[in-house]
Length: 262
Image (tube, rainbow, N blue to C red):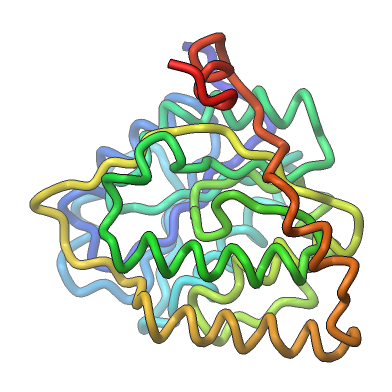
């Protein structure tokens, strides 16, 4: 496989020694610049990455996903990439699917590309599934358009969108940052498109760092403030209630899935 030049992959990771090497090596086969941010791990994760063709940035203590993402993204932007792909280090995303996100980006260069897990959402843990649905409603309202999977961390961000939106985003709450980028981008006319991908829910995986109740509360609080500050933005609510569009299909099978066909 020929690697896609001028793209970077950013992987924030905390105690992912069991999976991080496989994820990072798989990503490095697709893009030339892979940046892993070790967020104060204590499980030997750095040793697991020894000799891997990646850039390793280490936080002295655990700062949370948002701060790690921002550090990795800033590093990638300093190296002149045209877009940054983010994914998790726990193996729930297949780095081979990065090619789908890049293809969608080339078709619509101004859009954020989200790897949507709608293909097999019935396999998701139920608390997370309902928490994501709840978050989708609020984030779509504030962004002003329907979003099918606002909580997927597997995304492609155009560099220009990141430079415009990141200064407005808070990095103190780990899982708020990614939602806030979608809102700020939407307000600047940059919508998202979805690419269908499967998620891998490993039976022996460590517990998710995402807290379905606590983190959704933080996200909704951020969204509520943005809505109140703009007079609730009722036109955005109306637009957000439309059927989600913006699906980008990589092949005919995915086009049938998008249309609801078998």
